[in-house]
Length: 203
Image 1 (cartoon, rainbow, N blue to C red):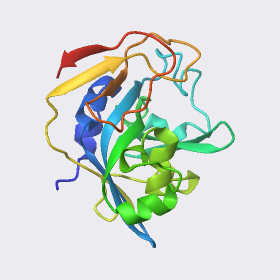
Image 2 (tube, rainbow, N blue to C red; image 1 turned 120 degrees about the horizontal axis):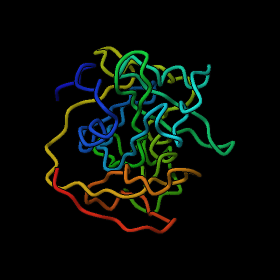
Image 3 (cartoon, rainbow, N blue to C red; image 1 turned 120 degrees about the vertical axis):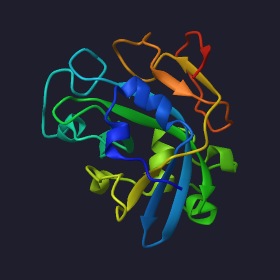
């Protein structure tokens, strides 16, 4: 597999979202390696996106989201879960892609150990917290460079995706109808629970 480069990821988060669908996220730990094919993501910009963590400016929490591209932005939510994002755009201009769901393609035994409540393999990384769980991602990985060949977490180019679906983002209190959630046909895509119509578009 070819590792994605910083330049490839230094683009608008909407475009980066489509690029990342089908790509492979690989996590190394003392317990082993888990690889996940990304099947659902969400785009977030900065100053022009009220749903973004960067909408009100730079803080210690969101600093990684201001670039450079290709780094992992990890945050804690609801007092119990970690969510992971891949930073896009250029250094100093905030933007990122939230990783919502994936299909485990390697390291099943370790993934099942980390997600023992999953009823089947398609549920192992079905949702942003489950995805970080099977990959062993927490706050310690915030800022990791996914484009470095010796990084503990790496992003690789995947097989081309023929069809991309889009719809409203999940779990945001503002800009709820912005159709910047993107996914492919997969049983691992999370369930959308807030209503709204999905549309299909060809990438």
